[in-house]
Length: 297
Image (cartoon, rainbow, N blue to C red; front, top):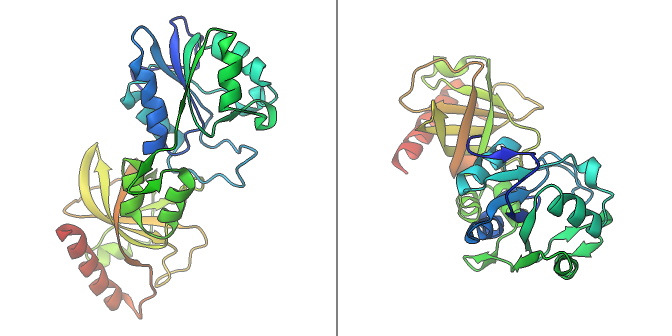
């Protein structure tokens, strides 16, 4: 991260966005961007680490990694982030949170949250209660309403469902950015090289929402340069059955060694479902068609 202060005690008065922000989608960004509208107040965010298993979350299925979350907040113009360990604050009452976090840590003068925000032990207080309590502390509270796009209320669950269905284009539109994974490139079986489709292989991040198994047009970032690619998300049913999902990506018009490097791959559009082929030749022919689809779409 650059130009951002992380988990420090804040001296300047701030405008603080409150939220878990597990996707930083277009709805979340209406809350975050509100903090930029107050001259003299430094824009700040209170959030938790993306891999935190909050009580309301049955399992951790994020739309982006914590590193990507912090990166996007910095790119949006956020100057301060306070991201404490959940265990250290989960027993706070609403008053505790205001006094120990918003005042003592963040010097908040304005607080922004979504209409469905909850705070306090067990989520016992809502956004309206926060607004009422903050009055006595001289803190203004702005509650942002639900945000709709394409006649859909934008929320993380809806976007995750789209990704699980393979509707990556619509998911990306609601996200406001391309859904991406970032992982270390590991050694594979090198079959791709024998059929003119060498791939980089990545173990799919376990805490990121898993898309519909299949082949996607993608953009792979090599040294920050975006390159058109084809990515298969799945378990390689033709060659070997993996229990752990993999992302196998063929980067068009690229030759190089990326082993051991952390590489970001963004999914752009769905091409087809993962399928089992009769043999290597049928697989090769389909991969050639997939590459043409990605190149021309």
